[in-house]
Length: 126
Image 1: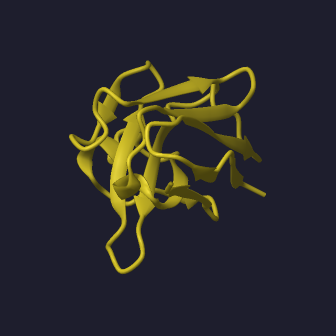
Image 2: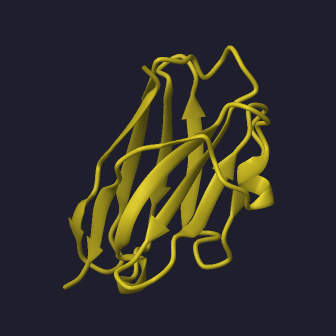
């Protein structure tokens, strides 16, 4: 069964850092042209694309996180990460990871993904 499980969320003060992890099971990241992405949804708001990474390492960042967040993937560990620095209260949201197994580039195109995790809550507050 294909599954994505996020971890690493929590409460952090403004200016702090967190690293989110997303472990994939049921498929192997390094064997296919799989695109991965991180998305977030704040209370009362629509889901927002945060960052994408392709199988060959191309990346995309939303303007709101550019220069503060870094997406990486470790195919050997079957995991994708989101390093978040200089966190702001407006970064508070549930963060979801997602995978595109069919085309590999749908995250970059802003299209829907194939598989989604259940999310991890990030709260930035003093």
